[in-house]
Image (cartoon, helix red, strand yellow):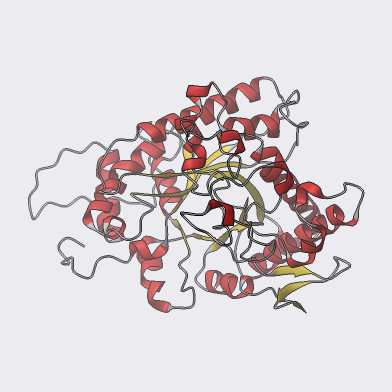
Amino acid sequence: MLSASAFFLTSCATILDFATPSFASASIVVDTQVPFNEGISGNDDLGDLKRIYQSANSPAEQALDQFNQIITDTGMKRTRLLLSDVYCDVDQTGDVFGYTMDGVFHPGDCQPLAWHLEWALGRGLSPHVAVAAFMPPRLVQYGPGESWNRNGPAPALFQKYANALVRYIAKKSFDGGASSVIFEVSNEADIADSAPENWSDTNPSAYRLKPLGPWGRWLWWTDPAKYVLKQWTPLQTHMMSNAEDPTLSYPYGGDARRLPRQLLPVQKIFSQAIDTVRAELASNNSYSGKTLEMAGPALVGLSINYYPAENLPTLEEVFLDQTFNPLADTYLAKFNARLDRFSFHYYGSTDGTGGFAFFDNLVDKAKAKLEALKMNNANMPDVKLFLSEWGPTAFEATDVNYSHKGAAWTAAFLPEAVKKKISMGSYLIIGDGQGDPNITPALG
C-alpha cells in the first residue's frame, strides 16, 4: 500500500476528478482538516473517506511494535478485534466474569481479550469487537443453543454472560480513553465454520462436528439433530447448482434458517446487553458522550450471487426483515434487536483490478430494504452502512494488499464507497498497510 500521504493525495485527486499532468515536480496539497463536500455523499466527503480508511483488523501479533508506524502513517482511529473473547466466561452463577482455560475458571480479566484491548487502547484506537463466535465454556454442558429449554437455566445464564462481556469491554475501553465501542455478533456466519473432526476428502462418513466451546464449533447455536452433515467446503454449501440438495448440506446451504436459528437469537441477546450496559453507565458522568453501538450481520454477501436464481431473499434481506419488520413471520417471530450499523464485507479482485458491480449490487439491495422497512416503521432508527471488512483481496498470500497495485485499487474504490454513503469501514488487516520492502521509496 502507498504511504498515507501518497494515498490521500491519490484518493483525493480521484474524488476531485483532477486531471493533472504526470510531471515529477507536480504536487497537490489538500487540507484534510477542512470539511469538503463535492456532492458525492451529501456529507463531508473527505471525512467519510477517512472514516472508511482509518480502521483495520488488528494483526495476530498484537504485541509487536512493528505496526506502530503504520498506525501513525495511516491516522488509524479504530481497530477490529476478532476471536479475542474465545476463552471469556462466567462462573456458575453468571455473576463473576473471567475466562476458562483447560477447564479452570479464572475470575477477573479475560485473556486474551484484556491484552488485545490494552494493545489497542495504548495506541489510541477505539475497539470494534466481534463477539460470540464460539460458545462460552460454562454453557457447553447445556448443548447447542437451539436445544436450550427456554425456561431452563441456559438462556438466562447466557444473557448474564453477554451483559458481563459488554460491560467489561465498555468499561475497559472508556476508562482507557476510547470514545466509542462497536460490537458485531460472530463474523461471516454465512460461510464460516471450523473443519469437522476426522476431515477426509475421500471418506465423508468419517466427519464429526467439532465439539462445543473454545476453538470448537463456530455455528454453536444450531442443533445437529436438525440438519444433516453432508459436506463442509463453505463455498459449495452456497451454490444452488450442487448435485446434492443444498438445504440438507452443512451448515444449511441455501436455507436462510441459519439466521433465525443461529445469528439472530445471539444478535438479540447482545442487543439487550448493550441496552442494559448503556443504562448502567448513563449515571456516570465520566462516561458522558461515550457510545456503544451494535452492527451486523457481517456477512460476505454470497447469497446475492446464488439466491436470485431460486427466487429467495438474500440472507442480508432476511436479517433486516427479521430485525425491523413488525409483521415479519419468516420461520420465527420478529426479533426486534437493535441495529445501529448494517455491516457487510467486500473484497475486490486478486490482482487489484476489476469493477465494483458486486459491491454496488450488495449496497443497493441493503439500502432498498432499509428504505422499504423505514417507510412502514416510524420507530425504526436510521441505520448507517458499515463496511466492516474490505480490501483488494482476502487472499493474504498475494502482494496486492501491500503493493502499488493495492494502493491503486484502494484509491479507485474509496470514492465509490463514499458515493454509496458508506459511513465507516475497516480495512482487511493492519499488516497489509506495511508495504513491500522490495518496493522503492518512489513507489511506496
